[in-house]
Image 1 (cartoon, rainbow, N blue to C red):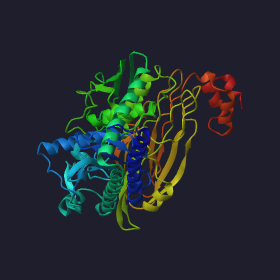
Image 2 (cartoon, rainbow, N blue to C red):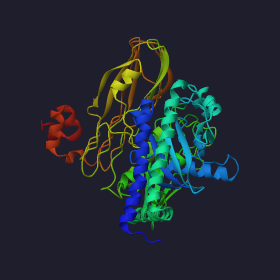
Image 3 (tube, one colour):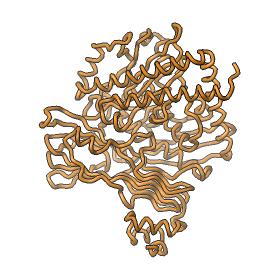
Image 4 (cartoon, helix red, strand yellow):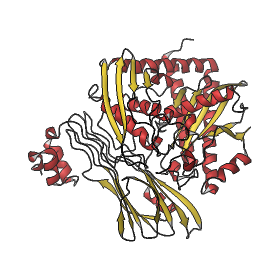
Length: 565
């Protein structure tokens, strides 16, 4: 079927709009601040045939692009094999098993078939970060877990909603295994309501243009996305580039893990070879294959943001060599640091490998950590238990055109830190500091952006703190002569005594009492280009704004720059 460009464009926008509205509805209706305020969620539309991505919300986490596609594909296969009960209209599956196309256990996926004329036209799916799924520590970020069972409840695909009604038995099993279970019903209903809205928007689109026309448009959009990415790949010089990115440690063994990546361009294919990377690790910094692939996809989206979010865009990208490394975790390897941390090191490796081939498109390394800080305890004033999850931003890397963004969201998505007013309202904490981490950006022709510096006091009740962060041992690398950004720093002040985790930014179950404090300084981005070539006027402006002292500027950018004050 031939489609005119206007109709094709309108259908593309309609599919995108349906996903955007699902995202918005999910956030507005959710109970947990990590979803309602931080937007740690994503919604999409997937093929009924193979689960391939049709459209995803622009405001959804890019790291979920590949994982939700993989998860939907696995679910379709399990239904075909008879391992999962087939759906009827109104059914919605829930799954968080990381080995079935997921990330970590806290990322809970809903999947619902969308029916037309008695057949499945496509699948609607979304993922939301639940603040707790049980396990050894509140929040699920067990820094020293050695098996996935220690991280929480693992759900295979099961029908949480049957013919539109919440299954009380499945819901009871979930609530019996997680903390603050009484609060999860708000997130469950919000997640289901987002899918309801998506179905309504698809009804309107299909009723307007017809099923055959929309199917033809979906096929054409996938073909065009593939052609667009292939054209970008052809613009890269033929050859190979190699880079390494490092994880501080796995949380158990205090030695770095290496992501060793070689990228080769041949014809219209870009091959990513991870075969030289570290073997599977004991601690929770293993990555499941779906997340590893998705991390490559999101890195290429950063480099070529004009390519539509579609399965076709992934087809020229070939990912090999993960088997036998910590980037292809198999049961029972723990994976809580998978999506939030390892994925960002994978993207960093892609940036470092391609910056020489594409210097005008690729940035220096960003902060590269989600800054996962979980606090769980009992609030005596409100007579209730709580689990608080704090994520945080950091500096972006400098690029060919300008300095990096300060306190930007993590590489893996658009999630933002919840407002401190919301956190103080919901949890027994007080923020004493929430500011840019001045001087943390790596020096360069275009410096890296600055990280975040925050400090929290526990006001009442006993609590336990856990951290799964990274870049505490190595700062985000600069490129083309630029310097690294500042490392991540964590300190806990208990009874007036300062404690720094042995693994620098990974530790679990730290007991806190009222008056104890936690301070976190997130990394700055890497610098781009030779610092000595930086415009003295820009250095003088940074000094005027207090981002660097004159002495710091002199040390980082050279004697003349220090005199620019």
